[in-house]
Image 1 (cartoon, helix red, strand yellow):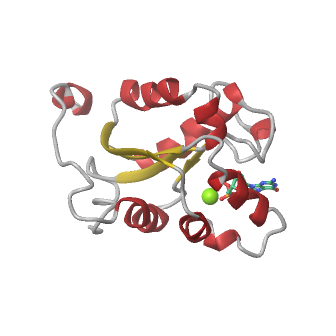
Image 2 (tube, rainbow, N blue to C red; image 1 turned 60 degrees about the vertical axis):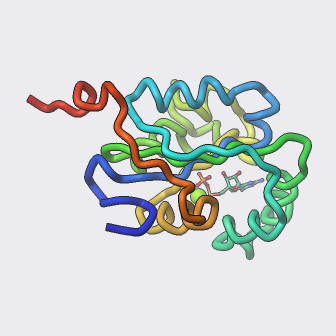
Length: 165
Ligand code: GDP
Ligand code: MG
């Protein structure tokens, strides 16, 4: 069990999802939240903010040597629109979140995924999701690391969603 990302492979697993400024300015926040809600995932944290350069650079630190890094950080921090940062919890949510989001390049994303439905440009692909348990742990800690930022709660429909027999 990790401090932020819950227990891998259980219903307490958590992932970090962020709607990027293009998703916010295009009015997609409601649809994206709705997809995760309707699937059966639990919202445990949400905030809207214009990230500082430092936060954006830390978040994308593994890409710092890539040619698009500066443009990526500029886009996330521009303030033309905020980002919506969230933590979602539930069974297999890290992997399922990536599947719901679709491939990095929207032109390769499967039909019905968020990126396929709403985008055609790799530099404006609407949304971020953690790609592994370790990155989920890191990213949730980075964006929601202060005490009390993550809610522990049980939706009224949780037993219906989770039942397997
Ligand atoms: P993700 O995990 O699917 O978001 O993809 P990565 O972690 O590889 O890259 C992070 C983000 O950087 C992507 O979502 C894109 O916004 C951006 N990005 C990745 N590759 C490229 C690229 O080749 N060109 C540009 N302009 N942006 C890229
Ligand atoms: Mg990534």
